[in-house]
Length: 396
Image 1 (cartoon, rainbow, N blue to C red):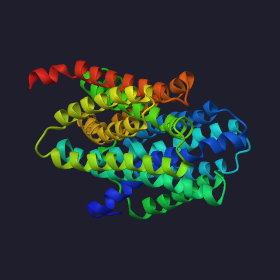
Image 2: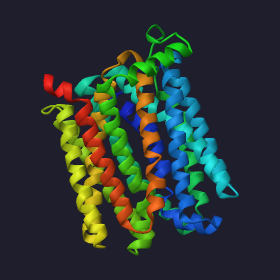
Image 3: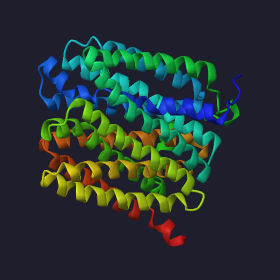
Image 4: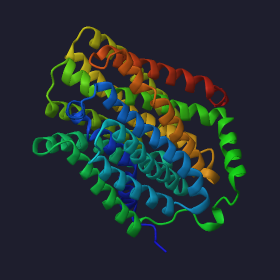
């Protein structure tokens, strides 16, 4: 039986699993125009590949969470890494956009398993502020991936086609598979596993769905992620086509925004020793809302000098939103960490899946629709968590 590795090693493993989504979403963003040209499809169809991966991510989390509560964490996560690696390799030889979309769904499914199990592992080992600190450290990998991924993707485009990007993603999946196989311990012993069948799983989801406190924090994260997804799915077209930014410059801008995400996450890990996760969450949601208001104004005026800083500030605010909302949601149900993490991820993917098509339907090449959608999700996120968690605030 594997022993628990040193904290830094465990953070690296869980961060690598969490980064599946970031790598698969972000590495090929600079290649969007090239993919559209190569497959002879409009930009909206290329954006659909992001949505397909997000739907797959949600399905993978929804399935893996309850299974990991019943069978342990290691077996599901290994299955997910293998699926991710195989799907990525097949995308590299996809003949058309229809096959591309289907395989992206499968790739997202595999990545989603790793994402939800990594959260469950944290909840197996930590709770409360300690869980928030640990999730903030794992967020470092989630933030580093967007810094590295677009830059790597742009570099790959210099020497080969966009298909080479997915071969690299397949290699990453193989690497993580071997790391998990050798180093990740089983954090859910047999005596703590849920032994019921489908009825127990349904009952667990029903219990979570009726808990206003859980839903408030889960929806705060999901709606905020939808705003991020509007940025992810559209910023490449907005900055490259709308403002004339080169693929390499776009990769740099995207990377700098991710630096803000990482820095804010690490500041949150320190601040949670002096402020409650709830207070940090609300402060970050207010910052994100303010940033999107100014971003919309900058996009309407076609001022890149306003657009870039506000993109940075919005993305950075999520470095505080994500770990604290996750810790607050999962802290309620230690006995079914996998199931609660699964519903959290499924809500995130379901809601975010509307963001890309919504921006595309309004016109992806201008920054106004992107900023308006980001603003809408930021506002609804703040209102929702305020309403649903108000009794806790009043009690405090």
